[in-house]
Length: 639
Image (tube, rainbow, N blue to C red; front, side, top):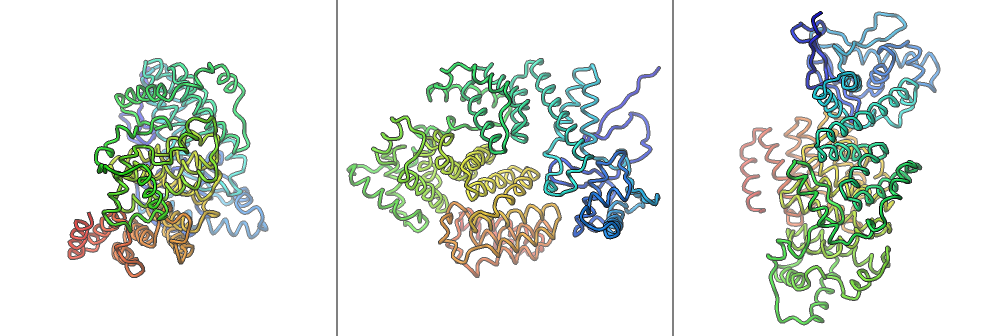
């Protein structure tokens, strides 16, 4: 008997080799992470459901029904449970008509079958590919095969499909609590655990320890409460002699679980209790050396490094310290007096002239990492405390604001120096102090921006992830929102648009109670993210909300500098949104709109350059050569 030959497409669509497919694939639907439909044969009317969320909900619900079919009475009851029966049926008829328009291709193929009077049915996987069904197929194939290489391919394909949580945009809808979805969610959870467990075990059997660790780390980043994956990673870290890192990961996850009303599994608690106590008291020098060795190994194998509080740059070897001007002949008392005077300016470094900036540079160079009063460093370094006094918190907060001021003035080296003067110590206390966690989150977001100015955009993601963790521990919704905004921007800079969009969705949940300036920034960024998916209605709504909550006097907002937001950023995101919606002429108007409100000289140079860059794109799209040349000239002048 001839053995059946088969393969998979890159998207997980199964096909037989050497045979013509009976039902050609028409569209792909993504339910894991942000909802998306990708058409291989164009839809007759793909925008028909843009203003009808009920049609999209009907599609999703049918995809979870047994055999992708369900009685109309069931569907009406699940989608409109509080409506009278006749009204619910009428709503279903209207939604199904819209869905039928969307699921009919330009060649006349129909993916929604309505021929049966009391039943609605969707096309099967051969025509309408769905990511969760492809995921199940890969899991099943990997578990059934005895070929190790084939199993690895199937596990990796399954991992690739798993972009995020199921139905992330519909988590507040009542219909997602139905039994069809509950059962599928539970099955998906179990399959996901088997996938991570088996894939990491296969890597370990092949001697690829770093690949196994990376698989577990990446999974925990996306699903931080998966305790099975957590336990495997903890064991792996301890086996490699990285007990400190294991303890940090354990503490971070334990706090996250507690915040969600859950507890760490007992077997994890017992395992962590057995780690030698001396591992908890490893010296900072030993910890740095350990992390550096592991980072070097990972870099050789091509993996992203997640910085910890112990892997922050050593300021004594920082290249910035070589570039700072040295000032001699200044007494310590005079140094402290001038430095205090500068601090009291409230971070308005963009208003300093060159001589005052040079004074600050000299003071930082003289002081090295010690820009704090010496008695404070004695207090912080030599006493076994885990909290900060009110005075210390105020001082550190001022340093954060000053760092943003320097960043906006283009003094990135000085800003990095100032950050390094207090951020490592603040991070060390962040696990025990909510106020320290709040400060650490702000400092890490600023550091991510400074890394971007050094063209090291890859470092932005781990820094902002760490900032988000500390921000959530602090419980301050404004700081949480700002950290999530930083993470969304980091993902965007790294071309991870799905992750960026998902992060904006999370930020929207938090920012409702955040400071108005931060809220405005998130609404603006979310508008551009929705525009990238062609969702004009949400784009217009969030742009309107961003302008509506923007304060009349933004400089009076206590988060003015760290919000990194101004009327010019509203114009920037509105312009980006119009570019995504293929409306370059409107984008040009948006990019120019802020100039009537504020002088260009008050806009940080880095933001000026970003606006000019995208304005140039809009000029090209509008075929406005004169405007494009003007953007080039202004860009060169702004550098």
